Length: 332
Ligand code: UT7
Image 1 (cartoon, rainbow, N blue to C red):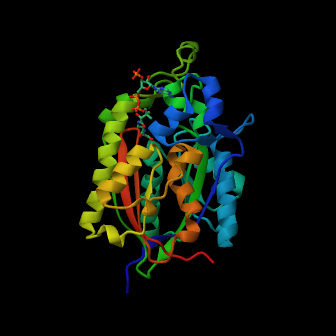
Image 2: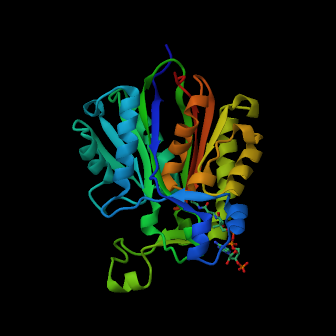
Image 3: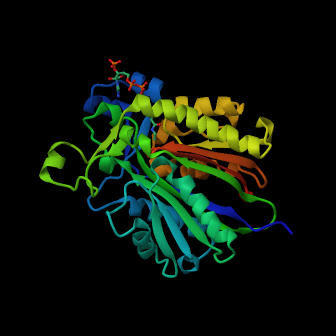
């Protein structure tokens, strides 16, 4: 009898309607479509408009669709883990707000903040609840409204990020598919290169912090790039090695979508051709915790039972990691 693993049994995502194109960004800051495309691979991103709307509203749409696809009711969900860097509020956890809005009255929920690696951190955490045997239906949702912390006068960051999110359902699986292995890493000394300066306990919000624009994303792009390009590739090669996986065994690489050049370097290191790499950064930009589940949702019909899939991410913290899973279902 195979051991009980956690398998993704449904996936769904949601992005807001409004599309912010490179042409529009050219009107906001001193940049060009050519610069953005060649340096990042991004052409457009989706932005959540409307007062009073937050990350939970994106998550709610993704989860409602997820439940519908799987044909189950909200009351059947036991746990919701929300990976987000842009929570609705400092507290309570966005997961709690999502549970309330969707009617997941029997679930407990909490947030995980690991910046762009949050979805894989949360997926691995959720899988342990399933493997324990105590939980049968766990939702992991990765979501961000990055536009809420972006300065649209800062060309170094405003071209990169977008809003969106996606959710997966984890259930027990004993057929040999599911989440097989993971490597998660962090190095807090990288915090100086990518962070939001104010609004936390070190520098609470004040008139001064607002005037100094300290509630926006601060990124030293080149320094982050150097770490991201090696760490994401290293960890993906490491998970292949320790599971004796060759390039030909792998059906799909699902990389965090931060920069096409980082994705290409990771795929090269793994020996994978472009045809095995999920890439949609062109249309969504970097949605932080949303990138990986949005990819899984877009490629769902091309994923087949037993496919070997590697997820890989790198983000603020620094945080990074990879997950090896065997896809558990065919889409009808
Ligand atoms: O998702 C979480 C982790 N984050 C990442 O993985 C992001 C990693 N970093 C990157 O993807 C890249 O570093 C960026 C896309 C952010 C920047 O690309 P880059 O090739 O590293 O550019 P750079 O920061 O070295 O800047 C090169 C030049 C500079 O001008 P000078 O000093 O050479 O005259 C910048 O001022 O490009 C300039 N620049 C721009 N020019 C036009 C910076 N942003 C822009 C812009 N448009 N939007």
